[in-house]
Each structure stands twice: as structure tokens, then as C-alpha cells.
Length: 226
Image (tube, rainbow, N blue to C red):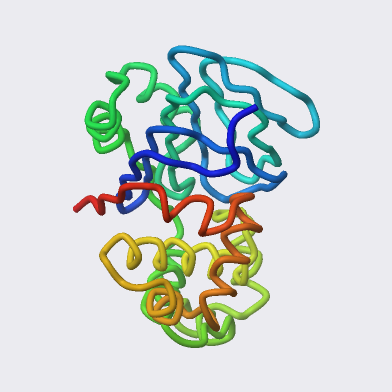
């Protein structure tokens, strides 16, 4: 069995992330990002929707429930924001890429982005990002998007795939991770991203990724990409 802690390198871009090294076990969880696991040497074993799978290349679509059960010491993991990169495009880009952090970064940067067709959703998302450091009120987001609250929830369900509250939590987590990689202490990063404290941030990380901050962030060498 693989260890519970992760170690290696973590590169974080605007709408994607890359990890290379030892992949630890996780509890069952589901996160918003698409995830691709590449295990060139030995197969990785994961649980997907309750079924066990072993393969050298595993695509986990956003919000698909899964757990990492066993992994070799050298794996590449790619995370991509579903609002920007479709799962099929992600898979196609990674399959053509050189299997290295720099090769995968280049492939992800060149991967086609899908634009949001509805400007109301775009306005709401911009408002979310502008207010993450404090309270994000759904009613205020709806007002800035020029829709009713019920319309905003329907638009998010259709175009984002998450309720407003869960999308805000995901964006808070992404911001806190970026601030941590930029050198902020965990408590400061958590507060700056709108979490009540570092424990709230760590609980959210565990709920969405199946691991605690101590299992991942302490042993990963970080790089924040431009």
C-alpha cells in the first residue's frame, strides 16, 4: 500500500495544477476539478464510484466520487478547472504531452479553453473572486449579475455544475492554496481567502480532496506559475 502522505513537487497555475512524486492514499471524496493520474512505471489503483480500478492512466471527471487506494512512488497528477477545460480536451492534451512537469505544463497552457456563453454567469463569477476575502452573499452576486437569486442558482446549476455556495467554497480553497504557495502562513492564507481559520481551511481540503493540509502541503515543494 502507498503511504498516507504526499511528497514531491506541486505546480499551481490559474486554472490547472500539477503534482509529481509520491501519491498518498485518500479517503473517498469528490472535488470540482477534473483529475488525470499518470503512472508510467506501475499502475495506480483507485476506487471510482465504488468500483476498484487499476491502470497507468486514470481520468477522474469533476465531481466523480473516488479514493486513491494504492500508487507507485512516481506519479503525475493533473487537475483542471472544469469551467475552463473540458474533460475530453484535457485527456487529449495530456496524451500528446511529454510526461514531465514542464511537458505537462506546456500542454495545459496550450489546451483549448471553453468560454462561458452566458454573460450573467461571468459577471457573477467575477463578483465571487472580488469578494472572497469577506462574506460572499448570494443575493449580492445575483444583483451584480442582474438576475434574481433563483435565476442565479438555475444558471449555476446549468453552466457551472455547482450551487453558488459550493462554488464559493471551491474558489476560496483555490485562492488559499495560491496564497500558501506564494509564501503566506496557513492562518494568514486561510483568512485572506475568507475561511474562518486554518482549521476551517484544512477541513475543507479534507472534504474536497480526501487529505489534510498536513498530509500534502508540508512535503510538497511548491511553485506558483504565472
